[in-house]
Amino acid sequence: MVSTRRRARRRDSVSQHHSKYSESHRKYHTLRHLEECLSHLDEVRHLAVRPAEIELALWFHDAIYDVRRHDNEELSAEWARASAEPRRSRRRCATECMTSCWSLRHNTDPKSADEAILADIDLSILGAAPQRFDEYETSIREEYNWVPRLVFDFKRRSILDEFRRRGPASELLISLSDLDGRPGKSRSLAWPRGKH
Image 1 (cartoon, rainbow, N blue to C red):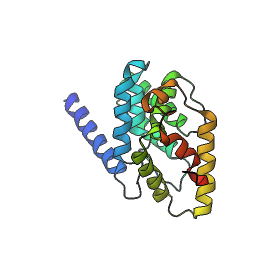
Image 2: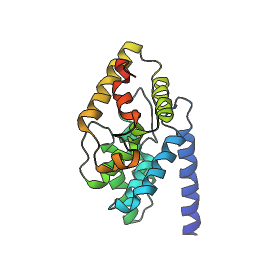
Image 3: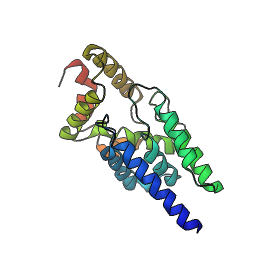
Image 4: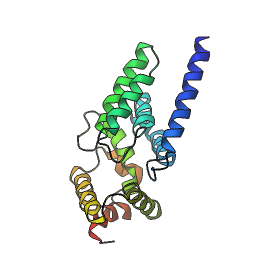
């Protein structure tokens, strides 16, 4: 009986995630982004201290995504906590997930090796192949199409400059995407200035 309820809860959670990641206002932060993140995790799972927490955090990290809000990560983390099974280990896992989701605001430095892996997986698009990277840039602009172009360019440059200042959180991002050798990084950091 318990396992039946647990399976039903998991089915509901997967369905809710599918619905959230398929919202019409999403252009980049979609199921494709989630699948790419989970695929990267599979490549480096052996490097993680707590891979289950990273996986859970990836499932939830963009679950709530509204470009007009500033508390998406907090709301996603709260959903992760509320969705946790009542067992103590699951609550601990959800708490770790909440901390990790919070760290993905990209304005805080990761506090652990696992948070660094999580951040690098989320930002691995910066080292993507040129065609995928161009899709990413176009999709981000579409998500923020309500922002005037000059404001968008200024904010985007600021965000990308911050990514450049911080660099990869771990060696993982470089190894995942060969970030130093692909056009994506330089194009991303230069794009707002028009230097393709």
